[in-house]
Image (cartoon, rainbow over all chains, first blue to last red; front, side, top):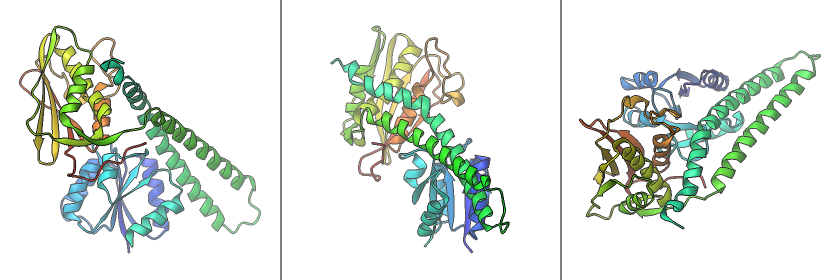
Length: 116
Length: 238
């Protein structure tokens, strides 16, 4: 069973994307802020297969979670969810970047590809 | 063309970008949310086995999706037009050249000097020379206005894989450093409060960042950009 952590401070995005991914059979944990995600990842985090990171999280940036993830979950894939075109720091440091607002079937297919 | 003119286009684009990008980002968040909700509802409806449901429901869902797409296209077109005004010229540039161009173009009071000792190493960074010079110019002008007279300092150092440009002054310093990157906040009359935000956005575009120091006297702002060859080249909008 593939386990994901979705980190997004936007409640609507978080709830909707989590629902769609759960319908596809993923186990989805959510974090609503930088500090919540950091706390979850700092000590003995669950074995996430992938982390979906928004860039701007209100109290921090997704990019600043990347070193922690690489250290504690070296096999997990990092997917930056970008709100704008171009390279924000999270997109630059992630394994791949998926634009927010991408039609879900395409989003899913790109996610499945990186998880293979 | 004077040196000042050289950064005028970059300045206008940076201003427009800083004023509109957060809005574009927020609208895109809403679009993403509406699009996913719509997809969720459509999929649930498709799974229903009620044969005589109101045909307007899927029809309106299609309209919602169409409007969302049109809004997204408008935002995309705005961004494309903005960046089409001046395509980025990203290449290895000498760090000292960025500072010199910024100094040449900075709008500083005549009684104000800039102390800059170029580093002995010819460190290069991968960036658009004029954009980075404009970001540094924002820092110089901020410091210049804060100090008023005398001289402000610019230094370039290397720390690990980062090139660090630091601008220092002996002005009153930042009242509340935590609010430095709040848009449209300025304690100076006639200012719109976007200078540091624009500088940070530009640094971020080239894989870097902007940090506010805490000196005992005055203010210290550092712009950090990776040294050329230490990281993959930045992917910037055309």
